[in-house]
Image (cartoon, rainbow, N blue to C red; front, top):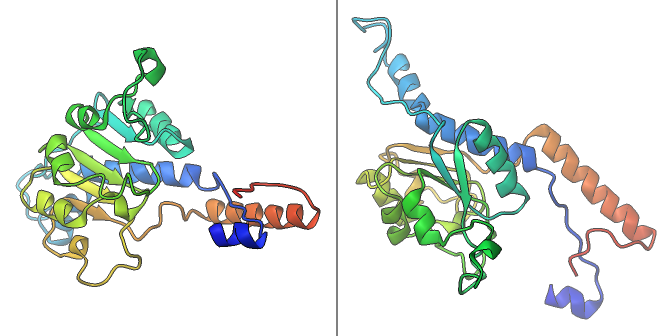
Length: 243
């Protein structure tokens, strides 16, 4: 950005093209975890349903989203879209107070119901990350944060891999200090084979290869946004300028 500014180069971006795709992916990860979908599919492939002495398998406890509490970190377009879907499932949604604010607002009403991140972790069944990766948010979810989330808590990350300390999450899953995680992003990408979250012995981890954004409609939308930025620049107009 500094070099572009110095050289007089316009910088534009494409925004909000994958909102629906990301929000539905959050719910897909969450539903996979609470319904124990992967566990039951593995049981079927292993022949356990055919060997059952009753009509169904009940080995993995299933939870319902209705009544669960979702804490969202990041109240932008993606966080709010996820909140709407969560509320449609009957979940109770709260947001973390902005991480840019060192102190709470003097008037609690000014926080719009947001709460400090430690409190959000301790009072949520699910944490979903929708904040940017900055110096302030790198490794935001570390060992302490995971311990605050607790043994019944679920973590969803469709934002940036660097928000979560991977070794801390791997150990929390192995030791059952959290109930599970749905992760779509790692750092770096593509991840090396020895990445902590690619270990084959991690229970209750649903891992997808950075595909939350990748619905066909979203990919078409980003192409159209980029083309519109180029046409606007060629016409001497300002569109989606970030600098």
